[in-house]
Image (cartoon, rainbow, N blue to C red; front, side, top):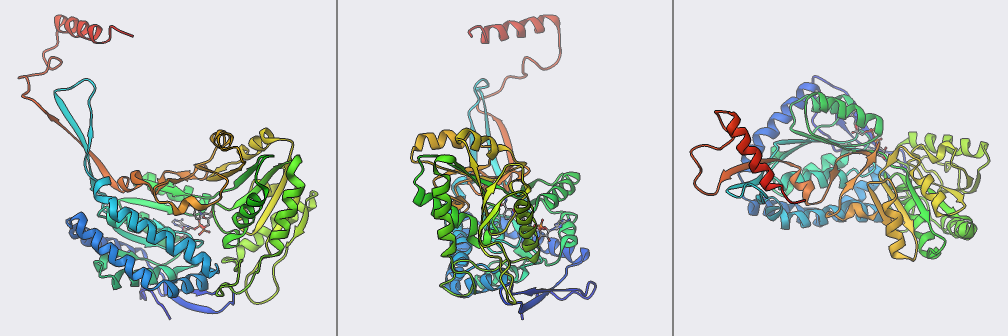
Length: 503
Ligand code: NAD
């Protein structure tokens, strides 16, 4: 049984269960406020030595971690699948592979990305300026259960490459993966205390914010994200919040319906719909609505739901029972108001937590299911007159993480994409950009503040410090220094007029 530190002062335990079978997988201790403080201190001590490592040395260590992850792929996928309920292929393609790719991308480029950046001064040519990047220190990460490996490990790897230590508070629903990630980290010979995993619930997360960390990366729900941002704000801790989504799919009449139907089916049901970027509402114009709907219904009926630890399962288990209640409630509300269940609609019988992939027809923009995050395998179809109406509805949301446009006209696709209020809009594709480390993962509106990934994301893990210096021998004093006088004022004014005489 995998166990985190057993704490005398806070003797509670969190038991982690396999959502597909109900079997207990192991338990972890709950870190108290004092334990969290000690963990942050250990991380801080380790970070000082780590920051002194050359980029090359950091890169070599991280590439060793990459090899350990690759060597343990099968075991890792099985562990993720067992604790989270996603299928083996999803564990590979959405957790392990993107982490390995992100590590490779940033390990190769960190030194260049974090090299000092010259600023060309347009006026003060006699002076020079540059930004240099200094690790922030200890990065706090609070993560959710739906991507228990890729989210915290991606952020941690970027933090390590930029010279920081990490204290991770994983979700209490999937703590064992984080504890195992720490074991892999140590197997790779990374400095032991540089990565701390503190298990517990919300109070442990709060204690992390209170413990003197230098930056926070929070991924989770909107209400918790607001609380975390507020707590960080009170302590002036920079905080990135990656929160909920309600991705609309705007389908144009000229879309390739075969690709669109497959994309919607995968985008709605991968990870049992428990993805912040899942397709949660489909806006289809009258001219193609019925044909597209029938294609999606057929594809959905063909999905094989069951044991996630099998290579031949398409849809696995629901990780958190609460999500079944949310889906049930929103479906009931929609059906009461006239929507029709075309397939699915119920919890599957048996010990495990499974909810059938569900397609709803006849959903309208005034229904709750169009506005509240479902975070489950439900695909509501809304029939619209045209793309303009689809666009209006797509933007009628308090969330704005991802959105999708389907059309064969590529330039029209980008034109529509630019009109959608969303951190990322993909044309003729769904969800995949999280796995592209050079692109930003970010929300607008209530979906969060800040971003992860990208070269700027790596820089953001550092303090950016500005150095301003003299390039040539300076005057004894600048003309705007003391003493002030009327003649000096008039000379400076003349100078200004001369400089800005042309429009
Ligand atoms: P959650 O908000 O319930 O919990 C997230 C984390 O916050 C957990 O580790 C939890 O223990 C911790 N926490 C709870 N209360 C806290 C407090 N007061 N202070 C500090 N930490 C606290 O979210 P969840 O159910 O784990 O995750 C699902 C949500 O996450 C969905 O809304 C989903 O859309 C969102 N999500 C967003 C992204 C993204 O990249 N934008 C990615 C994955 C999930």
